[in-house]
Length: 358
Picture (cartoon, helix red, strand yellow):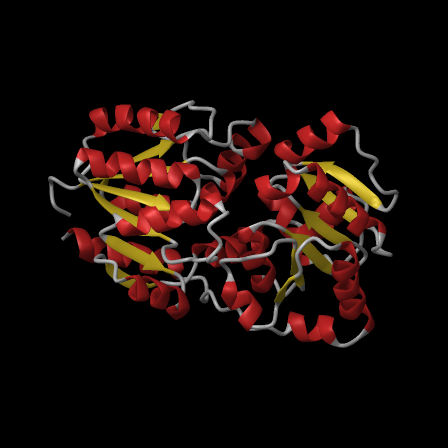
């Protein structure tokens, strides 16, 4: 590659570690590459454990921002760029680290490569929507998962080069589910295949709101199934502070690593989630999904029939649950085609990057 090409990747959360885990080694091998981790997720079981278990190398620059504040993140990234002097900066998705990294790159004069570009919920209340739109607007190379997300970028008339590459979460799912010992994981948590519903909930608009937390807990009460609930630190904090009563059918787990989470997801009879990544992972692993939100940027999972957007009303959510278990709906959802590719997205991203920097 060009001797003057210096690439920096910037991310700071657990999902970004997962989704970039196969791309980082490719960049290391072919470029002068610096890996910058902001520590937006800074508790050990939300970040560092994922480097270890996924075999992702440690970052060249562990910024220790320990914050999701935009200004704090951008300042820390800018300081790292003063040392790296990148010509190109790779950011992923729609986190605060994503936008902060893109803005720092723009300020330094580097060209921005946005992986997972073009997602749109069309819900301006979501901070992630602002992050992804603003990042796309200043990116020179937009690597987008599907033709639908490409069409969103085109409708906005953005000036960057667009390439459809699939989603790297599929690569990670397929790679790491093979490494996980499914029976050992199920045994460790004392569950059997199809014997439980899996739940994840962490979004600010859900768990920071007392009203919405109560709705979620009432939904759990109405589900006549055992529920496993690996708890996000944000959710745990709010549940503890307000001393909410957890329904008897719910078993709360500490946040789990990816090699535990994937078997728990794959063997669940159903997943309820407010996570964007879990919507993608569920359709990849053929697990029916109900999304506890009023908007989503993963439209393809709904179009394909593997996911329903059900909001937070306990009666409505529990109705969908009954339909999934009491009719043929669950099996039809399991048959939904994965819209995000065949596990080659990381290779396609790398190929597009090589062509772009030449």
